[in-house]
Length: 225
Image (cartoon, rainbow, N blue to C red; front, side, top):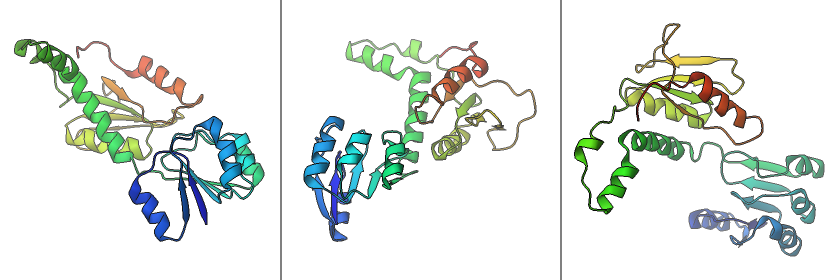
């Protein structure tokens, strides 16, 4: 079975496909505009991408194409309507990067609270402002908002609890809001609004307004970094 990988891909993944007997063609340099011609020339049965956009024209160019795999979460870079009309299956790999993204979110929160980028800049300039950068409030005991309770959101919530943060979790449709304390227990009505918000949601016309409205309505502004 011929497989075209049109994006950067780990060698272990390529080796695994070859061990299964697949004829793997790796073309990580391909862009969205190059994909239609590549699909016509290579004529794979399976197409694997990460961030490369798979347009309707590209899908129509693969005469033997039967499956498109997004090596990551979400399928927003694939023309699903065209794939469906052509009978091409589309799959993704949800959850594979959830822990890494959750750790990045927590790292960025710590970095913002401790002003780590500012400290690095000053140190590189030969300035040691210990007194200035010791004014951070810290994360323990504060309240965090999480917009989106998918796999990433749940991983963020776990790490928030470990760091002593209370969390307000908000579903994308705003129908339900789950409030948990640092011990994972329900908070009483009237619990204070989040002091910072994380929005692990796929970017789309439906989700982008959620983050903006959530930040305006729920985040507190009476605190210092």
